Each structure stands twice: as C-alpha cells, then as structure tokens.
Image 1: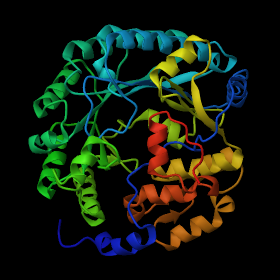
Image 2 (image 1 turned 180 degrees about the vertical axis):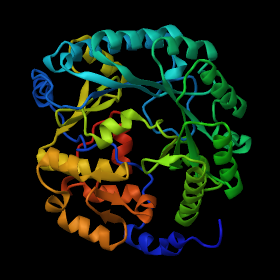
Image 3 (image 1 turned 135 degrees about the vertical axis):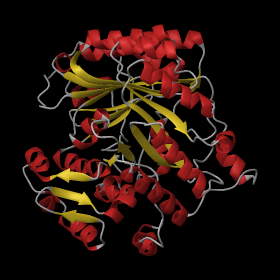
Length: 458
C-alpha cells in the first residue's frame, strides 16, 4: 500500500458516526420476533395460494451436524451421532414433502439449492446424494439450478465430491478461514492447511468449477503479512469465490473465554480491521475478481445465485431443517433449533417454525433497501417495479443523510454504496431498518442463528 489511503484518514469520522464497524451482515428482514400458532403460520405463509412471484425460488437446508466444533462458532450445531442423523434426515424429508404438497410449493421453480450448517460435508455420500435426490423429486428444480454444499476441507473427500457432482453439485463453499498453520492452530480448526489444498485439487478433478472459500481477517494476533499471504494463496489457487469475514468474538464461545483469560491475544481495533479489509479488496480487484457484496468477491460468472435471489431479487426462500430461516410471501421465519423439538414437531405433521414476522409492503421496502445494499446497490427499476415508488419517496431523510455523509450515491440506475460506504456496508445497510427493528443487534442475531425465540428487539 502506498502511503496512507484516503479512506483511512476519514475513518475517524465514521467511527464517531457509528461507534464501531458492524461485523454482522444483514440476514433476516423483517426480524422474526413473534410466535404464531400452526394455523397462523400456514395462513401468513399463504401456502394455499399458488406462487405469483416472477422470480425463481431459493431452497435452503440446514444440516446442524459437525465432526468437531470450532472454537469461534456461534451457529446451531451438534456433534454428529449416527442415530440422530438418521432421525433428522427422516424429519427433513417429511418437512420437504409438506411444503412441496402445498399449492405454493407445487407452483414454484427452484433455481438454487444450498445445504448449509453446521458442516453438511460431515454426512456420508449416500446421505447427501439421497437428500439432494429427494429435493429434486419433491420440487420443480430448474435444469441450470445452482446446487451447492458448504463444508470442511477434511471431510469433503474426493469420493464424496465425485458422487455429489453426479447429482448436479456445481458449487462448494468451504470454511478454510486461513492458510496459516499458526493461526489455524490458534483457532483450533478441524482441518489442516494441506487439507484445503487437497480439497481444491479434488473438486476440480470432479468437474466442480465454482469453488468458494471463507477467509477470516482480524484474527487474534494476525499480522498484515499473514493476511496478505492468505489472499495471495487464494489467488494462486485460482479460487473462484472468496468471502472475507471480519472475525467476531461472540460471547460464550471457547475463543471468547480464551481471549478474556489472556491465553491468546485479542483482535485488532477498528482501524486495523479496516486496513486488513482494504488489503483484501485491493489485492482481489487487481487480480480480476469482482466485488458484488460487502463481503463477497468472485471471478466473473461465479457469483452466488442463492445470495442474489434472496438479497437482490427479494425472492422466496424456503428454509428447511433445525434453525433454518426462510421467507415465503413476506413471512420471515426461523425454525426451532432444538433438535428434539424440531424432529418431534415435523413427525407430528406440524411446521417446525419457532418464530416469524409478516412484512407489510413498507417493511418489504425497508428490507429491499437493507438487503440490497448488502449487495452494494439497489436497482431503481426493480425497486419501482416492486413498490411503485422511488426509493427517495419512501426513505428521503435516510438517503439524503447517507449521501451527505459520503456513504451513498444516487443516480439513474439506483442507490449504491460509495467506496467508504462499502467499508461500512453493514452499518449503512441497517440504517434502513424500520424503527421496529432498529435495535436488532448481535445478541438477537445469535439467538436466531441457534433457532431460539427472540421476544423483542427493544
């Protein structure tokens, strides 16, 4: 980096404005804070009505099992036990069938299938291919659908990848986190650096031509050179999609305790965090990657269709499984994260929804702005098509303030983040939350990630 970048000299003004750089991206909107009866959920989802959206639907399946638990993970996960896996997959198939049998489910076209977790790759080849086959039999899945599975380099074996590729798997997303042995040890990662290299080689040999990885920055004790080396390694490995995630010390995780006890260093301050983010951005853009969200960089043609459907196109997303979240006809919901409760409800013929919230048109517009800006911009034409009004008509004060602060740009195409706005993208996106959800923060997000009820965001 040559000298001190201009945005770094302006960082202080944004620290004063926002207090801190928000590391949690917009995900749920509206925030599902209410609990409803089975009949109410059925009605709010409008499952008895055929689909009227002209965009394809996304399908998300949560696999909560892992071979080992990561020291920093706040999400809904359980150490894998085979009897639980068998019972869980039986419940998942039943939940899939319940949605597919409705007038809504039978009238949608699925354009993206995402298996997340947890660590979906910890399941066997037969279990994963079986569940993919079941989804494709239950729903109308587009021939060119993106089918991708998240996982760990250690259990994404060559045989497993080959079997999944035969079932249409065309993208994988892997939690590499770092290529530095020292940092991997500090994080207590389940896989080794060599496992990551082997995974890339095996995936390409199976014909999977969209390999995505997660990399974490601002790790405890991480140096600038270590971070540059991680980005350079990703480029040299010709990774197709790179998600750069600011390390978040989540309360009650193992690593939070170790930092609090002084056993390992803390993370860098907000200025170091911005410096690391900027290093990644500059290196990846120079290498030919495109930035299409606050955290995502991809080679041309390798963007995540699942994210585009949900965040940019405001499509339906059916969430299946314990702690899965989805949105159907404006009803945002999160399933119960408790494994026994989830399975019991499904086996008794009930939807396993833990909490949810129905958005009216204005709340949907709030969500379109917040989720859209996570993806860097909101199309003016699409916004007017959906809401019959310009963004400035609905949110004049917020847009004007953020433009004056140098965080947004208005033009004929729409509303987009400036370079500074991208750095502070999570903060900027959440400026479009309505007053009802303005206090939605980390604690609420972590409860929802585990499928636990959130009574209120106030």
